[in-house]
Length: 131
Image (cartoon, rainbow, N blue to C red; front, side, top):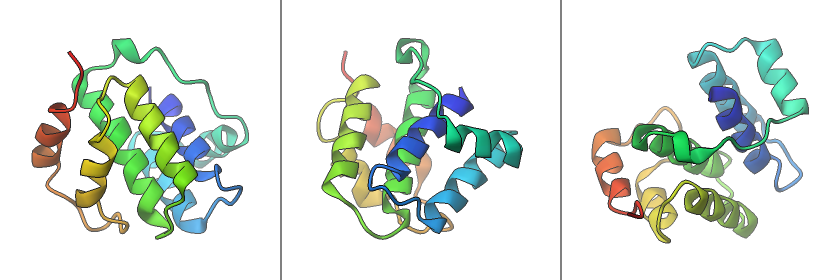
């Protein structure tokens, strides 16, 4: 799952045709925390994997997808409309109602070293899950 999640982060990071060093650092950090080595991460950057069948993901895994894409969207401190649209489309594929990205964006910081109260944020995001 982590390779496909990182692939989505890579697609988001390159949507503006510029892979910012902060975006690359966050992608690398997430990959390493989840057991990938630098070669595996580099391979994914060159050839991202397709999005997996999101129906098999747990609510926690869906939240992790969203949390990471919102944090990546904000890490370079420049949020483009195309990035917002990408995040909204991904949220929809994951089964979230419109508005979840705006809600999460308010509480996720551009600096990955500043952490939001993830459990509280997860509860808020779950209110947007479609039945």
